[in-house]
Image (cartoon, rainbow, N blue to C red; front, side):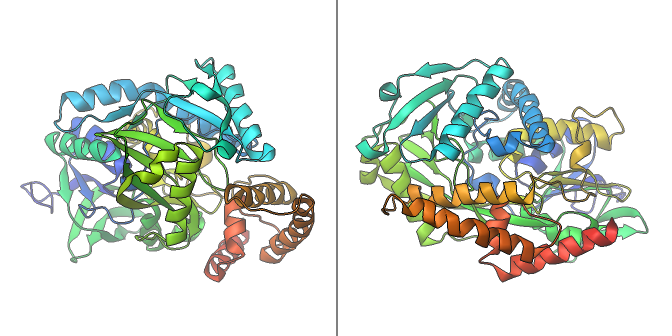
Amino acid sequence: MSANGNANGSGFDVAIVGNGVLGLSLAWVLAQRGQRVAVLGQPHRPWAGSTASGAMLGCFGEVTTSLLATEQGRAKLELGIQAKNLWPQWLAQLEEGTEGAPVRTANGTSVILNTIGTAEIDDANYNAIRAELTRYDEPFEDVDATDVDWVDAEPISRPLRAFHIPGEHAVNSAALLERLEQAAVRAGATLVPEFATRVVHRGEQVTGVVTTSGQTISADHVTLAAGARSQELIDSLPIGSRVPRLVSGYGVSALVKTGDGTIPDSVIRTPNRSFACGLHVVPRGDGHVYLGATNVISVEPRDTAEMRDLVFLLQCAHRQVRRNLWNSDVTKVQVGNRPVSMDGSPLLGQGGMKGLWIMTGTYRDGLHLSPLLAQDFAARILGEEPQADLDRFTPLRQPLPTGTREEIVDVLIDHQIGIGYEQDWTIPVEWHQWIEMDLRPATLAWANELDPEFTPPAELLFASRFDPELVSLLRKYYATCRENS
C-alpha cells in the first residue's frame, strides 16, 4: 500500500497524526478492525513524550490532593483505573504477535515518603494515595522504610515511611513503541515517515492532511495524537480558537548503568511534588535503571536538556534513593514533551468538525491510558458505543477550573517552597514563613494582573511569571474564551 492510500487510490479510512504510543495503539486497534489506517510521524519521534517516559503503569501512584479536589481530576483517576485493568491482556496480546525485548520491566511500585519533602505536599499526597487505594479496594502493603528493596539513601534524605503497590508495574517505552509499530503494520496500517503540517477540510468535513513534503494524505477521519505538536494542526482549523491551547511539559530523564550492576525489582518513587511527577527509579534490565523526571512548562517543545535540570535529577536520585548511583555511568540523556492544555485537562473526543478527532493534552497520563483511549476512540470512529466517559474532556470547551484563585495560589506557594527544600536550601528557621508571607500576595497580585477572571493551573501560573510568551498566549486564550462564552 502506498502512502497515498490503497491500490485503487481511494485513500484511507483514518489518518492518525502522531506515531507515539497513543497514535500507534489506535492504529493497531483500527487496523485489526479492518480499517485502512495511515500513521504519520518521523521515525525518531523528535519532541515526543513517549520516548523519554518512565512508562509507569500507575494511576494510584500519581494521586495528589490537587487531583482529587476537582471533578475532572477524579474523572481522570477513574479513567486511569479503567486503563490499569486493561494492561495485562493488552500486553499479552501485543507480545504474542510481535518480537523484541520484553516490554514489562518492573513488578509493582514502592512509594516512599522521605525527609526531603514538605508536609503540605509529600505527607498529604502520600496519605491521599493510600486513601484512594483503600477506597477502590486496591491491594497494597506497608513496608518498613529501612527495608525497601535497593534503597540506600543518604542519611538526611532517608525514607520515613513506605508502602508497596503490587499491581502498578512499568514497561520499557522503547520496547513498547517497537512492538506497537510492528503490531500496527502487521495488522495492515501504513506508516508515513513525515510530519503533517495542516489538516485539509472541505467546509465542516475533514478530508485528510498535508505532509512536510507537500503530499496530501486523503482520509475520512483524522485523529490528532501528536502530543504538544498537535497545536500547529489545531491552529490550521476554524475550530482552533475554541480548543484550550497546548503547551509542553518539558522533562529530562536519564538511563544509568549502575556501578554495582544491580537494579531494583519494582518501581521506586516518591509522591508527586514540585510541579512534577515524583522522583522515580524504574528498572530497565541489563544493569540499567531509568531516572526521572523533571517537568518545566515551555511554550514550545524542547529537544535538548538544560544542564540545571539534568544535574538536579541526578543529584536527587543518588541522594534520595541510592548513594552509589553517584559512581554509575549515564548512558543516555532523554528529553520529552508532555502535552499540557491551558486548563491542565486532556483534550479527548470529537474536534468540532465531521471526521476530526483530538486525542492529546494527556499530560503525564497518555501512555498509561493508551489501551483504554485506543479502544474507545476506535469505537467512536466506527460509530459504536464508547467505552469511556470522556464528555467533560471534550476538546471544545471553556477552561475547566482547578480551584479558586486563592486555592491555586496556595498550591503554587506550597510547591515553590517545596522546590527549595528539594534543592537543599539552608535558610534560618523563620525565613520560610517570611518568604511565604511575601510570595503569597505577590503571586495573587500577579494572577489578578494576568487575567481578572480566569486562573491557570498552578504550574502554568508559576511558569508565566518568567515567560512573557506564555503570558501572551494565556491572555489571548482567555480573551477568546470570553468571546465564545
